[in-house]
Image (cartoon, rainbow, N blue to C red; front, side, top):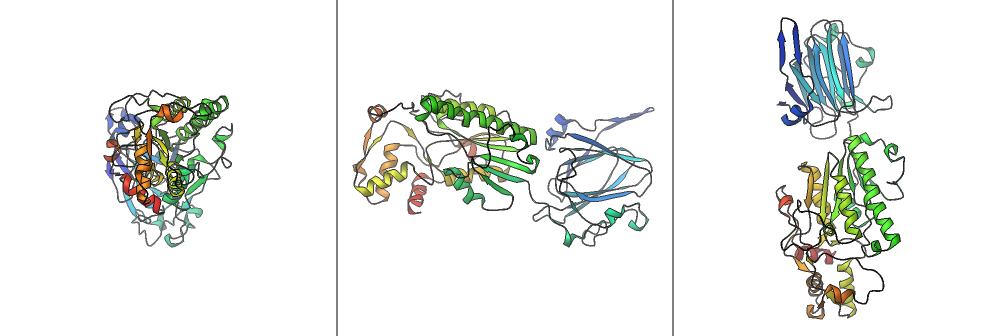
Length: 460
């Protein structure tokens, strides 16, 4: 495999086996080529271009899909120009292709081919069905900035009038990146993702009112091939209500049925699915932090639905599952409640036999962005804020202390004591919610330490 000055444009040498009868080659072999580093881009259509005369020149076209181009017979000169938004816009690469060489052309890279022998045919696989509604960008074959040295001068080449009329580089509309969709954009994590990802044109935010995951028309609700990533920040998280008949139904609908629909959309369209899970998939009986490969054993309905959702998302070819715990962000949450009680002079009784780490949504959003940006290996990652593991009572004392109140005002009680007088059903809680952060640290992401993160949160 040969890399090029254009990011993602890859050239492959293909073994050609010949004898007196002719030759044979494996034009596309998914397993071998993926092992060499070719993206598993999921082709859905195969096209053949046959050219009678030497000098037939087509392009420069940047289609909204990926292509695998290989010569069946003859020889061609290929020219590629990066027409995507970004620092490599305008980068040029040229090479000759014959049956022993193929090229992978990423979405948004303009490509053009000039035949060097008569009766030349080349084939290309694409990962989107051709559509008259598809949005292209084009570059003039004679553009002075690209300055392509055509083997056969364009004045002597066979070129369509349409290709002759394409704009120069300074008039090209750059191809935008594939989109990112954040689902659950009005929740705690959704709001943090708005801050992290910003208002770039390729980032979209959707609430439940904007996109119904249980709709039968979800597969056609959007032009999904235009999307690179879906971040599922939506979930049913009322762990106690999930133990009621109505809550159980709502939890399974949001956390399993909706997630299954998203996984189908993602897998069908080559989209990366980012899904947020929970420490509740574990029963909390281990005497060490939970790793990503530990067996799930949820105690209650909420944990069962999250474990089921994880199993479904894991079937998507491109997925990140982020297991987290004790989430703190905008809106009502434990830290805000403790801060209010401290200021009002109320001395709370807080559970001290559940141990874990809080996760500030800023850290969770930052970790998600890191995985997307670095293209870390797909799979499951634990992600919480860093530092020592604490009980809920310990965290309450930190809040009191940070606000200038006496932390001794917080009284620790057992989970059983705390819920003894609860008016309705309560979900069983894992006593050990500590998640091992070793795996995500290997990707280069280091979450903030809890005490400094807490101080920053309270100040803001």
